[in-house]
Amino acid sequence: MRISSISDEDIQLLKAIKPFMSSKSKGLLDIFITIINIFKPESPEQTLNIEALTEFLTLLHESFETQKLATSNKDSIEEIKKENGKAPSENVKDIENLLNTLAKEKSDKE
Image (cartoon, rainbow, N blue to C red; front, top):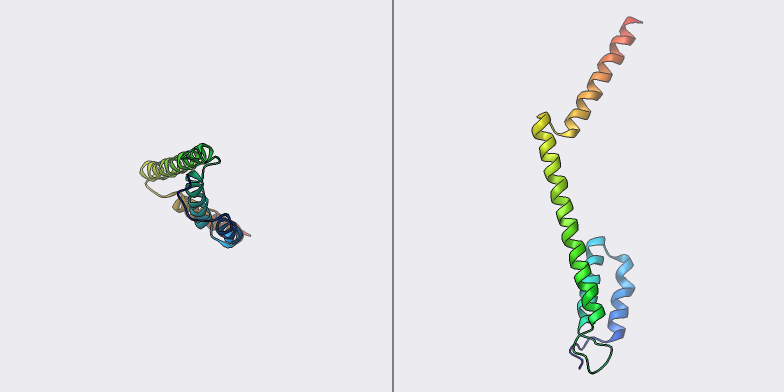
């Protein structure tokens, strides 16, 4: 039983323009093609393509893991800001200013 009316040629066209897309668009295209493939079973007796469904669930899981990691990294940066009272980039600026001051003092003495 074939539910979608999108031909294999249409899918090939989508895959052909993929290299010219942004990374986010590529990810969306992968998900879209995978969803289409779910409803294109390999045999007429099947209603769903189990392999495509498995691939789709894997893509979703990876997406959730990435979001979890990004949230964790953001929380870690917030913790560092709270502990130090400054953002990491501000600490780098302080160190740079200190090194510039020391270099200036050294050159003034010479």
